[in-house]
Image (tube, rainbow, N blue to C red; front, side):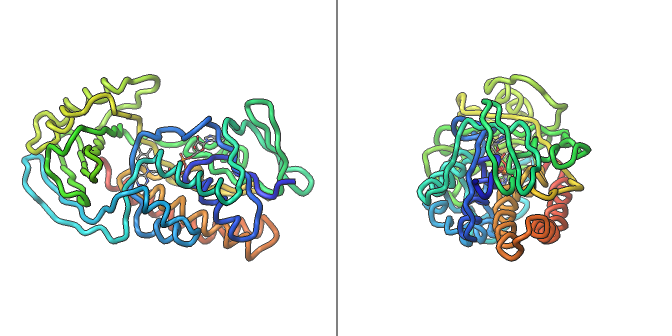
Length: 342
Ligand SMILES: Cc1cc2nc3c(=O)[nH]c(=O)nc-3n(C[C@H](O)[C@H](O)[C@H](O)COP(=O)(O)OP(=O)(O)OC[C@H]3O[C@@H](n4cnc5c(N)ncnc54)[C@H](O)[C@@H]3O)c2cc1C
């Protein structure tokens, strides 16, 4: 019987697998997608706390090799006035979500951890001495415990607590794009962020010949398909009247655009039952403003593995892990929400 079943092969799931293997466990990762994951076109910054967690699981170098340094943030107002220079406490690294997934999955595979793609958990039940999981393709698996690393819309969260809160729409869209060249001439390790009149716009030109940008703009949820061209148009309209390079950067962007509605989860009352436990966005999704989601997921992985190493009884380990992580992650979710559209 597999020891630890992990649902979700994103940041939290793969990092948890690596951390648990380091603690002497035998994890198996089950990822719903055939490759990659949801929203993988977006990019993110792993902050110093996340890098420390990567270091603890022996994954820091692989991520450094696939990413770019993020050393500073330059803040501007809608009129193009420079407001502030902020140093980013280092080391902090920028990379696409897809790259982070790939690096961690490759590392897991290289270390002999099975990563099974196309396995979408649909339901799970606590059994005598373990847990049984079922997947959308009709497959099933048994294990000692289930780690729900299945993201913000986590089915595992509902299995643990049918009353678990649904994610809250933050009233914002988040759009990511990649423009040709470096029209703004930014330094490779700097982020430029603009408190625009209708959108918060940020960009960096990390050195791959493109400018990576994001925009956060107000708007009601847009369920269903919105095309890359339409997302780009929404951003173009939102930055049109602002000084600075945002409009030129959007202009230099083709179809490399991905957008979506922004959600968070202020609190999840139950993080575990006797045999199932949540990590990452499944437990505590933050809006993107604090840029902490991936880093928190990585810290969860290390904390859960430490608790499972120290406490052989799963429920005791899960309780210790929750006690170590919940207050801090909820604070970060609240701080990110307080930043609003920024
Ligand atoms: C637009 C955007 C921008 C962001 N910017 C930043 C940033 O700058 N810095 C930062 O630190 N964080 C950022 N984040 C947050 C960060 O991406 C997440 O917090 C992080 O990816 C959480 O990792 P996770 O593994 O918990 O969830 P995910 O990365 O979402 O992974 C969940 C995985 O579970 C899989 N899955 C889902 N359902 C099932 C199922 N039923 N069965 C099996 N597998 C399933 C999914 O396919 C996915 O691979 C951002 C998030 C978004 C949406």
